Length: 209
Image (cartoon, rainbow, N blue to C red):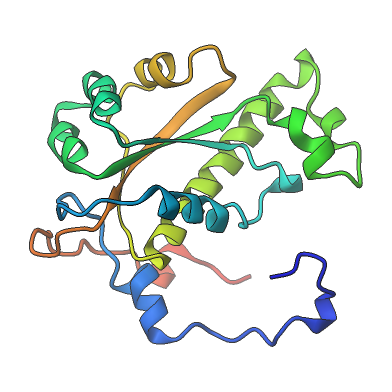
């Protein structure tokens, strides 16, 4: 879509069809087993180009990604995984390390040029605000990544169960990026799925006031 398109010219927004909703949410599953089918770099680029369009505060875009794909990189990741996550991660075509940049505000003059947004977060006194904002919006972007991956035909296996300190030292040394969570990516093996777990009902989790 042309970013300069006037809002009045945007097409009428309609609900996605049932197939799309099923793929992204209703029938989508968390995968722990994978087909032996590679994920091309071009698809990872398309994944980023799609996920980056989700909204963040002041367009701050703090998420930073490392796509662990090579055998060498997988072996670097291995010692930082909890025991139960090793096998499925080593067999996944790609593991995305979803991180967030605690110095995201340095990009705000370019990303949010119509206000002095950098000043909202600059300085030692605003360190906590920076870190909270980076984590919150980086987590939002991680969710967008999962939605985008499913929309593009990939299976996802998001997880914690790893050493953040170890991953940061190995993959983000010398940067202001910290790891948030991991997400295995590939073409899931539908023959190896657990039964879907229950979800809370509307009245258990929601109120309308």
